[in-house]
Image (cartoon, rainbow, N blue to C red; front, side, top):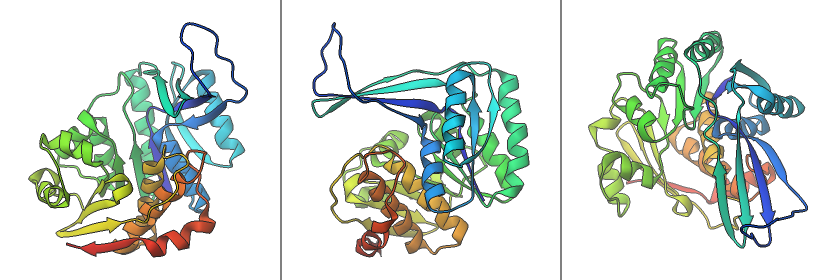
Length: 309
Protein backbone atom coordinates (compact mmCIF):
# COMPACT_ATOMS: atom_id res chain seq x y z
CA UNK A 1 0.00 0.00 0.00
CA UNK A 2 1.05 3.59 -0.66
CA UNK A 3 0.10 6.44 1.69
CA UNK A 4 -0.08 9.94 0.22
CA UNK A 5 0.24 12.99 2.48
CA UNK A 6 -1.29 16.36 1.55
CA UNK A 7 -1.05 18.87 4.39
CA UNK A 8 -2.50 21.82 2.48
CA UNK A 9 -5.20 20.47 0.13
CA UNK A 10 -7.80 22.58 -1.66
CA UNK A 11 -10.75 22.61 -3.97
CA UNK A 12 -9.29 23.68 -7.30
CA UNK A 13 -11.71 25.82 -9.30
CA UNK A 14 -11.10 26.45 -13.00
CA UNK A 15 -12.81 29.39 -14.75
CA UNK A 16 -12.29 29.23 -18.55
CA UNK A 17 -13.01 32.56 -20.26
CA UNK A 18 -12.51 33.69 -23.84
CA UNK A 19 -11.55 37.08 -22.43
CA UNK A 20 -11.15 38.36 -18.89
CA UNK A 21 -12.60 41.81 -18.23
CA UNK A 22 -11.51 43.77 -15.17
CA UNK A 23 -13.95 45.77 -13.05
CA UNK A 24 -17.07 44.24 -14.59
CA UNK A 25 -19.06 41.00 -14.66
CA UNK A 26 -17.50 37.95 -16.34
CA UNK A 27 -19.98 35.16 -17.14
CA UNK A 28 -18.95 31.63 -18.01
CA UNK A 29 -20.78 28.53 -19.16
CA UNK A 30 -18.71 25.82 -17.52
CA UNK A 31 -16.68 25.53 -14.35
CA UNK A 32 -14.51 22.65 -13.17
CA UNK A 33 -14.12 21.98 -9.45
CA UNK A 34 -11.83 19.18 -8.29
CA UNK A 35 -10.25 17.96 -5.08
CA UNK A 36 -6.84 19.57 -5.34
CA UNK A 37 -3.44 19.67 -3.76
CA UNK A 38 -0.35 17.95 -5.11
CA UNK A 39 -0.75 14.86 -2.96
CA UNK A 40 -4.32 14.27 -4.12
CA UNK A 41 -3.13 14.40 -7.74
CA UNK A 42 -0.59 11.71 -6.81
CA UNK A 43 -3.39 9.70 -5.21
CA UNK A 44 -5.61 9.78 -8.30
CA UNK A 45 -2.83 8.54 -10.58
CA UNK A 46 -1.92 5.72 -8.17
CA UNK A 47 -5.58 4.70 -8.13
CA UNK A 48 -5.56 4.51 -11.93
CA UNK A 49 -2.47 2.29 -11.71
CA UNK A 50 -4.52 -0.06 -9.49
CA UNK A 51 -2.25 0.49 -6.51
CA UNK A 52 -3.80 0.29 -3.08
CA UNK A 53 -3.58 3.86 -1.82
CA UNK A 54 -4.78 5.86 1.17
CA UNK A 55 -4.94 9.66 1.04
CA UNK A 56 -4.06 11.44 4.29
CA UNK A 57 -3.42 14.94 5.57
CA UNK A 58 -5.61 17.70 7.02
CA UNK A 59 -9.20 18.58 6.10
CA UNK A 60 -11.85 20.80 7.64
CA UNK A 61 -15.15 22.59 7.10
CA UNK A 62 -17.57 22.29 4.21
CA UNK A 63 -14.74 22.43 1.66
CA UNK A 64 -13.07 19.50 3.38
CA UNK A 65 -16.35 17.58 3.29
CA UNK A 66 -16.55 18.26 -0.44
CA UNK A 67 -13.09 16.75 -0.94
CA UNK A 68 -14.07 13.66 1.04
CA UNK A 69 -17.23 13.28 -1.05
CA UNK A 70 -15.23 13.44 -4.28
CA UNK A 71 -12.74 10.86 -3.01
CA UNK A 72 -15.60 8.60 -1.93
CA UNK A 73 -17.19 8.90 -5.37
CA UNK A 74 -13.89 7.78 -6.91
CA UNK A 75 -13.60 4.87 -4.43
CA UNK A 76 -10.37 6.32 -3.03
CA UNK A 77 -9.65 5.42 0.59
CA UNK A 78 -8.76 8.31 2.87
CA UNK A 79 -7.86 9.02 6.47
CA UNK A 80 -7.55 12.74 7.16
CA UNK A 81 -7.13 14.46 10.51
CA UNK A 82 -9.93 16.95 11.17
CA UNK A 83 -9.16 20.64 11.62
CA UNK A 84 -11.40 23.40 12.95
CA UNK A 85 -10.75 25.73 10.02
CA UNK A 86 -12.15 25.49 6.50
CA UNK A 87 -9.95 23.91 3.82
CA UNK A 88 -8.97 26.44 1.15
CA UNK A 89 -10.10 27.13 -2.41
CA UNK A 90 -7.67 27.82 -5.24
CA UNK A 91 -8.97 29.56 -8.36
CA UNK A 92 -7.44 29.50 -11.84
CA UNK A 93 -8.83 31.92 -14.44
CA UNK A 94 -7.95 30.67 -17.94
CA UNK A 95 -8.10 33.49 -20.44
CA UNK A 96 -6.53 34.35 -23.80
CA UNK A 97 -3.89 31.65 -23.49
CA UNK A 98 -2.96 32.83 -19.99
CA UNK A 99 -3.63 31.54 -16.49
CA UNK A 100 -4.30 33.91 -13.60
CA UNK A 101 -4.33 32.19 -10.21
CA UNK A 102 -5.95 33.27 -6.94
CA UNK A 103 -4.67 31.05 -4.14
CA UNK A 104 -6.05 31.16 -0.62
CA UNK A 105 -3.44 30.59 2.07
CA UNK A 106 -5.77 28.27 3.95
CA UNK A 107 -6.64 27.96 7.65
CA UNK A 108 -4.21 28.34 10.54
CA UNK A 109 -3.54 24.88 11.97
CA UNK A 110 -3.54 24.42 15.73
CA UNK A 111 -0.81 22.48 17.56
CA UNK A 112 -3.27 19.82 18.72
CA UNK A 113 -4.41 19.32 15.11
CA UNK A 114 -0.83 18.71 14.03
CA UNK A 115 -0.47 16.13 16.80
CA UNK A 116 -3.75 14.49 15.80
CA UNK A 117 -2.41 13.97 12.29
CA UNK A 118 0.85 12.49 13.59
CA UNK A 119 -1.08 10.09 15.80
CA UNK A 120 -3.07 8.88 12.79
CA UNK A 121 0.10 8.65 10.73
CA UNK A 122 1.73 6.41 13.32
CA UNK A 123 -1.02 3.87 12.62
CA UNK A 124 -0.61 4.14 8.84
CA UNK A 125 3.18 3.95 8.54
CA UNK A 126 3.56 0.25 9.47
CA UNK A 127 0.96 -0.72 6.83
CA UNK A 128 2.64 1.19 3.99
CA UNK A 129 5.29 0.14 1.49
CA UNK A 130 5.92 3.73 0.38
CA UNK A 131 4.74 7.14 1.59
CA UNK A 132 4.62 10.28 -0.53
CA UNK A 133 4.73 13.83 0.86
CA UNK A 134 3.66 16.60 -1.50
CA UNK A 135 3.25 20.33 -1.44
CA UNK A 136 3.39 23.24 0.94
CA UNK A 137 2.73 23.42 4.66
CA UNK A 138 -0.28 25.40 5.91
CA UNK A 139 0.01 28.20 8.44
CA UNK A 140 0.66 27.01 11.97
CA UNK A 141 2.58 23.87 10.96
CA UNK A 142 6.31 24.11 11.85
CA UNK A 143 8.80 24.47 8.99
CA UNK A 144 10.54 21.28 10.11
CA UNK A 145 7.32 19.25 10.13
CA UNK A 146 8.38 17.05 7.21
CA UNK A 147 11.55 16.19 9.13
CA UNK A 148 9.36 14.75 11.91
CA UNK A 149 7.27 12.77 9.41
CA UNK A 150 10.36 11.34 7.71
CA UNK A 151 11.90 10.45 11.07
CA UNK A 152 8.83 8.38 11.93
CA UNK A 153 8.98 6.67 8.52
CA UNK A 154 12.72 6.00 8.93
CA UNK A 155 12.00 4.30 12.25
CA UNK A 156 9.99 1.68 10.33
CA UNK A 157 12.42 1.66 7.35
CA UNK A 158 9.68 2.91 5.01
CA UNK A 159 10.60 4.65 1.76
CA UNK A 160 9.49 8.29 1.46
CA UNK A 161 9.09 10.21 -1.81
CA UNK A 162 9.23 13.94 -1.01
CA UNK A 163 8.05 16.66 -3.38
CA UNK A 164 8.34 20.08 -1.76
CA UNK A 165 10.50 23.17 -2.04
CA UNK A 166 11.71 26.20 -0.13
CA UNK A 167 12.25 26.14 3.61
CA UNK A 168 10.47 22.81 4.10
CA UNK A 169 12.94 21.11 1.76
CA UNK A 170 15.91 22.94 3.28
CA UNK A 171 14.90 21.67 6.71
CA UNK A 172 14.86 18.07 5.45
CA UNK A 173 18.19 18.34 3.66
CA UNK A 174 19.90 19.70 6.78
CA UNK A 175 18.45 16.99 9.04
CA UNK A 176 19.78 13.47 9.74
CA UNK A 177 16.48 11.94 8.57
CA UNK A 178 16.35 11.35 4.83
CA UNK A 179 13.69 10.53 2.26
CA UNK A 180 14.31 7.89 -0.40
CA UNK A 181 13.66 10.31 -3.28
CA UNK A 182 13.29 14.04 -3.85
CA UNK A 183 12.17 15.71 -7.08
CA UNK A 184 13.02 19.41 -7.34
CA UNK A 185 12.96 21.03 -10.75
CA UNK A 186 15.92 22.91 -12.22
CA UNK A 187 14.76 26.28 -10.90
CA UNK A 188 14.19 24.92 -7.39
CA UNK A 189 17.63 23.28 -7.37
CA UNK A 190 19.24 26.54 -8.47
CA UNK A 191 17.42 28.45 -5.73
CA UNK A 192 18.30 25.82 -3.14
CA UNK A 193 22.04 26.01 -3.85
CA UNK A 194 22.19 29.68 -4.82
CA UNK A 195 23.90 28.96 -8.13
CA UNK A 196 23.10 29.23 -11.83
CA UNK A 197 22.54 25.92 -13.64
CA UNK A 198 23.05 26.23 -17.38
CA UNK A 199 23.34 22.64 -18.62
CA UNK A 200 23.33 18.99 -17.59
CA UNK A 201 27.01 19.12 -16.65
CA UNK A 202 26.37 21.91 -14.14
CA UNK A 203 23.36 20.01 -12.74
CA UNK A 204 25.48 16.88 -12.32
CA UNK A 205 28.11 18.88 -10.49
CA UNK A 206 25.42 20.44 -8.25
CA UNK A 207 24.10 17.01 -7.30
CA UNK A 208 27.50 16.11 -5.87
CA UNK A 209 26.89 18.65 -3.11
CA UNK A 210 27.06 17.18 0.39
CA UNK A 211 23.52 18.49 0.95
CA UNK A 212 22.19 15.39 -0.87
CA UNK A 213 24.22 12.84 1.06
CA UNK A 214 22.08 10.00 2.34
CA UNK A 215 19.28 10.43 -0.21
CA UNK A 216 19.09 7.48 -2.59
CA UNK A 217 17.41 9.35 -5.44
CA UNK A 218 17.62 13.01 -6.49
CA UNK A 219 15.64 13.60 -9.69
CA UNK A 220 15.79 17.01 -11.36
CA UNK A 221 12.90 17.71 -13.70
CA UNK A 222 13.77 19.61 -16.89
CA UNK A 223 10.24 19.85 -18.30
CA UNK A 224 10.11 19.00 -22.00
CA UNK A 225 13.85 18.29 -21.87
CA UNK A 226 13.35 15.27 -19.61
CA UNK A 227 15.34 14.91 -16.41
CA UNK A 228 18.72 14.41 -14.77
CA UNK A 229 18.90 11.97 -11.89
CA UNK A 230 21.38 10.77 -9.30
CA UNK A 231 20.94 7.32 -7.78
CA UNK A 232 23.59 6.56 -5.18
CA UNK A 233 26.77 7.34 -7.17
CA UNK A 234 25.30 6.86 -10.65
CA UNK A 235 24.01 9.72 -12.81
CA UNK A 236 21.28 9.35 -15.43
CA UNK A 237 20.07 11.49 -18.30
CA UNK A 238 16.41 10.98 -19.22
CA UNK A 239 15.35 12.07 -22.71
CA UNK A 240 11.64 12.14 -23.52
CA UNK A 241 9.82 12.40 -26.87
CA UNK A 242 7.97 15.51 -27.94
CA UNK A 243 4.24 15.37 -27.22
CA UNK A 244 1.18 17.54 -27.76
CA UNK A 245 0.45 19.11 -24.38
CA UNK A 246 -3.18 19.64 -23.36
CA UNK A 247 -2.69 20.63 -19.71
CA UNK A 248 0.70 20.40 -17.93
CA UNK A 249 -0.74 21.10 -14.44
CA UNK A 250 -0.17 18.10 -12.19
CA UNK A 251 2.39 16.41 -14.42
CA UNK A 252 5.00 16.56 -11.67
CA UNK A 253 2.52 14.90 -9.33
CA UNK A 254 1.86 12.13 -11.84
CA UNK A 255 5.63 11.66 -12.06
CA UNK A 256 5.81 11.31 -8.27
CA UNK A 257 3.07 8.67 -8.45
CA UNK A 258 5.14 6.77 -10.99
CA UNK A 259 8.26 6.90 -8.83
CA UNK A 260 6.33 5.74 -5.75
CA UNK A 261 4.72 2.89 -7.67
CA UNK A 262 8.10 1.81 -9.08
CA UNK A 263 9.67 1.77 -5.61
CA UNK A 264 6.75 -0.27 -4.25
CA UNK A 265 7.09 -2.68 -7.18
CA UNK A 266 10.86 -3.05 -6.74
CA UNK A 267 11.70 -1.71 -10.21
CA UNK A 268 15.31 -1.10 -11.24
CA UNK A 269 16.73 2.38 -11.77
CA UNK A 270 15.97 2.76 -15.48
CA UNK A 271 12.45 1.36 -15.13
CA UNK A 272 11.78 3.76 -12.23
CA UNK A 273 12.85 6.77 -14.26
CA UNK A 274 10.83 5.69 -17.28
CA UNK A 275 7.73 4.92 -15.19
CA UNK A 276 7.75 8.31 -13.55
CA UNK A 277 8.39 10.31 -16.69
CA UNK A 278 5.85 8.48 -18.86
CA UNK A 279 3.09 9.16 -16.33
CA UNK A 280 4.02 12.84 -16.23
CA UNK A 281 3.71 12.95 -20.01
CA UNK A 282 0.40 11.11 -19.99
CA UNK A 283 -1.00 13.64 -17.50
CA UNK A 284 0.12 16.52 -19.72
CA UNK A 285 -1.86 15.03 -22.62
CA UNK A 286 -5.14 15.16 -20.67
CA UNK A 287 -7.36 18.15 -19.90
CA UNK A 288 -8.12 16.89 -16.37
CA UNK A 289 -5.37 17.19 -13.75
CA UNK A 290 -4.34 13.87 -12.23
CA UNK A 291 -5.70 11.82 -15.13
CA UNK A 292 -3.71 9.47 -17.36
CA UNK A 293 -4.69 7.41 -20.39
CA UNK A 294 -2.86 4.15 -19.79
CA UNK A 295 -3.68 2.95 -23.32
CA UNK A 296 -0.82 5.21 -24.46
CA UNK A 297 1.56 4.08 -21.70
CA UNK A 298 3.69 1.50 -23.50
CA UNK A 299 4.12 3.54 -26.68
CA UNK A 300 5.58 6.48 -24.73
CA UNK A 301 7.52 4.21 -22.35
CA UNK A 302 9.38 2.67 -25.30
CA UNK A 303 10.38 6.12 -26.62
CA UNK A 304 12.02 7.32 -23.40
CA UNK A 305 15.80 7.00 -23.33
CA UNK A 306 17.72 6.60 -20.08
CA UNK A 307 21.50 6.73 -20.25
CA UNK A 308 24.29 7.06 -17.72
CA UNK A 309 26.73 9.97 -17.98
